[in-house]
Image (cartoon, rainbow, N blue to C red):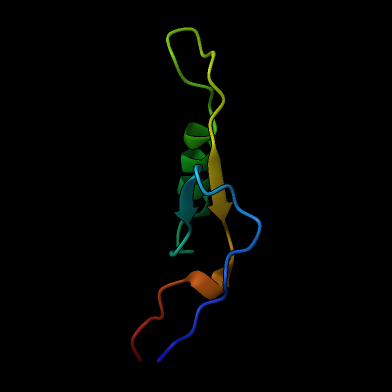
Length: 63
């Protein structure tokens, strides 16, 4: 059984986004850019997102 690390110090009300695939860095950067944009009719609300970008969370590939 694989044990993943605990996520410390995160905002419990923020969206948690964990990168689990490292095949396409450009797509990850694009997703991060979109997820962190202010939102609302005039962009008046700050995005509340906790991003985890650590290969330890990556899906193991079958051998």
